Length: 537
Image (tube, rainbow, N blue to C red; front, side, top):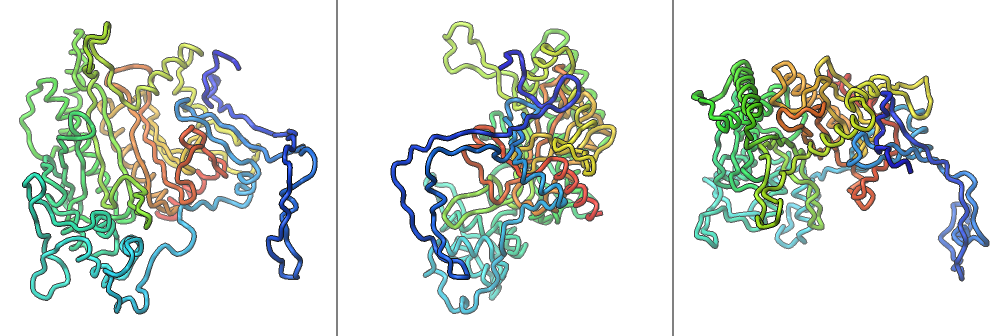
């Protein structure tokens, strides 16, 4: 193994580097007994047995199936293994990629169920109905099993929830089965007014204060919640589509919604940094895009002056993420981290963390963690090893991409859409069997460095990314930002990752080891995404 080699598919020449396994090997047969038995019969009556499973002598495989090995552009993200014969077959037949589970995933009204007392059904059946049923009357019959609702008159739609005192004396909703409650509340077929009562009305999920709002002249309305006691230290914010702007699916989402969700992220980040830098910010309410740009430039200038003078800002990085989709298995496993109503989360990350034990010599503080730090380290090391910018080489490799199978008659582009600011593309080494990424083409590594035009491009490409995945049937997508520290300069670019959950790849030991297995070439998947977006226009 070459010790100085950095495990990445981006060669310093600006080309992609990938390997291919053509296995040929012999295996010693150490079996001591056989268990030959009938497995069944063919239509013509021929007995089918398992004799092939008990060969005699050693086994030699002169030519096993080939496998392409593609290191991720970023070493810490592992390696992708493309099953060669399957990928070549899929490429020749044309792109046909789908995240939709096999079979019918909806559950219509079941004959005779109207006469059944739902309380007598096993809980897994109730969870299945809550998750998959599209029959509204049956969904409404589940309400009393979830919680104590308040009804007015003869209405079957609840007016609210009954509140009871909890262990600490605080009033809280009287929920009987929290899993059933949340699964039912996330069913898109539940009437919107019931969704609002169960999950969407401000306050129904706790006392998290609302500290921001986005309202457009059309139909967009978004609340910005603060979670002060957060698993993200120093608090995080959530931009949630409001109770009067129900968005349970990407198909319900429009560009204005995405623009509003992102606007609150930009606004909160710039305002919080301004406060940290003692900038006098008197304006309250919703800023216009131009006001936001003026604030960004002011914050950027103040931060640069502070750092040039040797000062240390408290916050030095951003965090942004979006868990889209909901599913809950009848066996009781929650299959995704979020709820169906569309929202995005964001926060600021401090530069350092106080040590628990300050008496350890040389440990006055610990550096805080940000996902983009690993990318910054790698970009710096890449330049040190090879004398070229990693991201310049990466962009060139994407733009000059060649197929691994050598087919000149099939598309070779990895790019789905983009402009002079950023591109939406399929990474050469995909994770999650369908990953998409957005990357800035300019040396912009975080939203503080992103001007108005760059932010508009990012918003548009984020919308296009989730629309493409939704068009292919994705129902659960994890989206997150990989950004650089403010005014750090390793030549880093801002990246957004979109990892859909594949129905038949729940995540197992291979993925935990960073070994991602796919049955298609990235160029064929990119063509499939382009076709989907073209049909949506």
